[in-house]
Length: 340
Image (cartoon, rainbow, N blue to C red; front, side, top):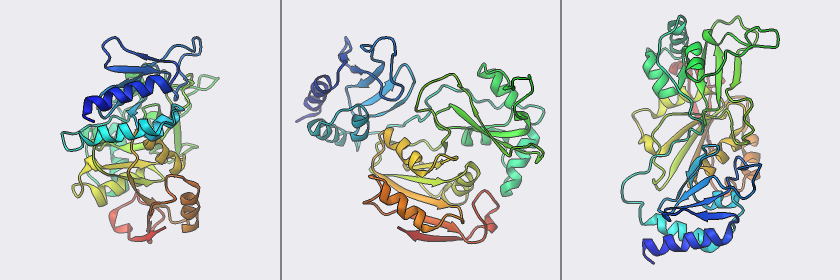
């Protein structure tokens, strides 16, 4: 079959296998109910997820803004189990692998970042740089690492009141903290820079009244991912500062960043990170984990055995033999590699 024949087959199979489903007037998209936010609660016939009828069959939900590309995993999320549909999508996508690139945006919520200097911005930048012995400026932190160095301005830009408790007291001194925006734009992971707050970290949910079940506080470094690459390497660590150090020391300027994701679990667990990117349409993942020193290999053996995606693939693990983790100067890191 040629590309148009594959598209017509996919269109027909989607409309047949998913109810309710609708074809747009111009026939460029098929519309179905979104499995990630649950779609409209008032009318079960409403459908807000639009699937483009052209390779690589990108989808976008107008209700919750989740986006990705259609593949076996996302079809299962849609409760579609059609081998014919799977084969047709794979074959149609093969025809565009060699032509151009497809960048993917992993941000679900349209959260604004800014580089406006505030009263404590210089202290925030100094704290960040001192952790690694870097000398980066505000623009680099915001644009590369999605850092928030002026919390009050960030909250104003996004029309979010400064979070307070029931007595009107600030929940946290966000201005004297450095924040990092989560992968989907729904959370900010704040880290105190003073050493004086009761909590070192504060995970701020920017949309507490939002009932979307897929919001999370996973974090990734910006990398300009190209979803049409034959294989994507997912590099993971536990914390935000860890993955930033790993990116800077071992990958920056040394790899094609369109083939890499640099992600931190931020307390959600490695399986949550893997599943997050699989649901975006990234199935052919080469997985590398930079583990904290206090997590033994047995943990990763169990992780692999419990995951349908991991059980038949090698898992590369690195440990730092000098210190516990990686959000530290380079001379305090010595890597030991293991394969499970």
